Image 1 (cartoon, helix red, strand yellow):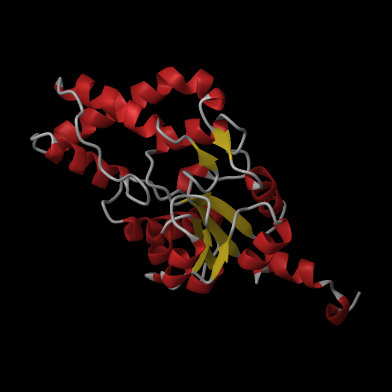
Image 2 (spheres, rainbow, N blue to C red; image 1 turned 90 degrees about the vertical axis):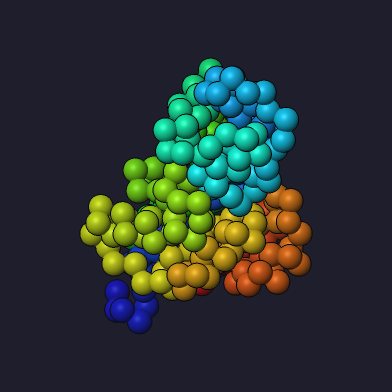
Amino acid sequence: MSAASVPSSSVRTRAHRLVLWDIDHTLVDYTGLGSIWYAAALAGATGVQMHSRPHYGGHTELAISTEILTLHGIEADEATIQQLWRELIAAVDRDAATLAGKGRALDGAAAALAEFGAHDGIVQTLVTGNLPEISRHKLAAFGLDTHLDLEIGGYGSLSARRSDLVPHAVSAAADKHGMKFAPEAVVVIGDTPDDVRAALDHGAIAVAVATGGHPATELADAGAHTVLPDLTDLAAVRAAVLG
């Protein structure tokens, strides 16, 4: 078969892509659990009962933990944050066996992950505000971890700025998989303007899904290259990622 007659889909699979997924309200929905887990973690780490909650969407665990401690008059030093995270992970560990009944996988998530997992040259991982341990639990509850390389993700323990997580994931993916990912070959998929800005800050493609608390117009105004209502239209998801 001549090069000119190779199907376009085959050509695309040879182009390296790095797909960086958000978790909450992009792949799964565990509405309400974050506050429950943080309340248990704060009490366990400091003995203080939670009375104020920050905004979680789009923020990293480091930013959220710092804000929660500050709101409760507790110094957000490294030792206290680490103790809070140990208690937070323990709270999620206790719920791990029942997570599937406490949340849901969003429609189309499994199919989209499987679609790109079948393409040579495409690496999928996470850019998420969650801690690594919590990320695994949230995804594994619905079998959504199968096509993701969780070792190279950009996690919320790394920085209070979500934009810092993207270059970390890109560098880790390049080192592990021996691929060079140009900025335009990196695709960030998420449900908040913070996800969009994190992509744009590094010249990556921003694909937004209006499955969280932000309407499509807000995501478009933030600069998303593509805004999808959800992940159910696999052809639309494929086009947004592969071009």
